[in-house]
Amino acid sequence: MRVILYTGKGGVGKTTIAAATAVRCARRGLKTLVISTDAAHSLGDSLDCEIGPEPVQVAENLFAQEVNALHEMEGHWEKIHEYLASLFNSQGVDDIIAEELATPPGMEEVASLMWIRRHSEQGLFDVLVVDCAPTGETLQLLAFPDVARWYLNKIFPIERRVMKLARPMVQPFIGIPLPADEIYGSVRQLLVDLDSMKEVLSDPKSCTVRIVLNLEKMVIKEAQRAFTYLNLYDYQVDAILVNRVLPAEVGEGYFTDWRRVQAKYQTQVEETFAPVPILESRLFDHEIVGPEHLDELGRSLFGDTAPEAILYEAKSQALRKVGDEYVLSMKIPFVSREQVELTQKDDELYISVGPYKREISLPRVLRGKETRSAHLEDGQLMVHFGRVS
Image 1 (cartoon, rainbow, N blue to C red):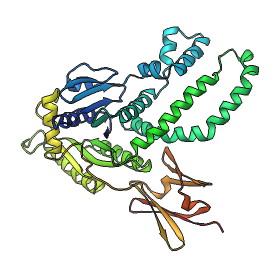
Image 2 (image 1 turned 45 degrees about the vertical axis):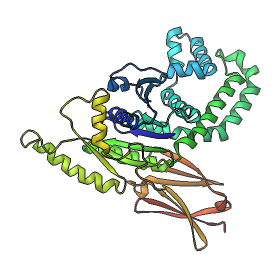
Image 3 (image 1 turned 180 degrees about the horizontal axis):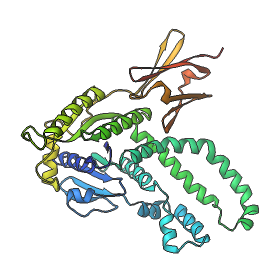
Image 4 (image 1 turned 120 degrees about the vertical axis):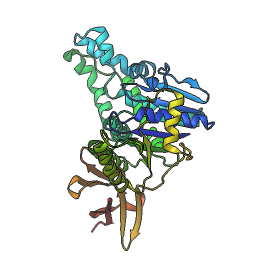
């Protein structure tokens, strides 16, 4: 199954472009599902139809779904949900409010991950188009499998053993319910599912990310940051989509300054993201709502190109031998040396860029070797490994 994730700053038109991509794929004869992971759902408004937490058919070959975190928690993580609700109840929280609070922040995104994995396993669709939340939430979503793996391997076994021993002695004195072992079983299954989800999301042969932007300074800056962090987590960006470009027929006068600003930023986008393909769509003179108008937007963006095609292929990581050293290279553009921190512990390399941290399990060939040096070269982080002296 082909998976396409759309992200970008809030308000740039991600939902509309995701829906337009899905419409074009469906009209090419591909069984297509477009799914929204944004808590502020607007996918149904874009398609001009009612959709819900399960996939519903909205046109020939076209299905749509808006993930509901509460629905997912109750349906698939009932034990976790029940425990959290009882925890809040024990502190005097109203029943209805406790039910709402029992859905932790970020569960909308986690539930979306589960659906992507589920659809991939079921194989009912040819194409899955994901309308992601604004950039920050999307990056947390995509980083979640790495965090889950770390928690599952490092903290979870210790915490579970400690709680199993301490629960009978501590429970009578603290006045709140402690998680039973079955709760830990549910949490473990959730973490295992998230870990396996990484295999789907990070497979460049089937899954790519597309960044949507407008020709505005703040939007482009956020797109650059997203591009950096997506490369850090080894997700393939195969296109940059520029939305709402003023068309040539817009005359001089009121839009003169806007045309000049957009022309400047068009050049900047091309220089910044090259060689990743840049796709543009004009600002239409009407609202883009409903399948026909969405198809018009899709044709403006993709032309004769198949929207489901992988538009750019390049590895963000590579390992090669140079003399007696091994060099691990990773593409992380738009950062300075001061923004990158490296830590090696045993067979794991920790790379921090700003607020995001990634753990990389080193391949066998690097076992027993230590980091000798690292430097940035044309947007590539080069880490040199050699034998322990």
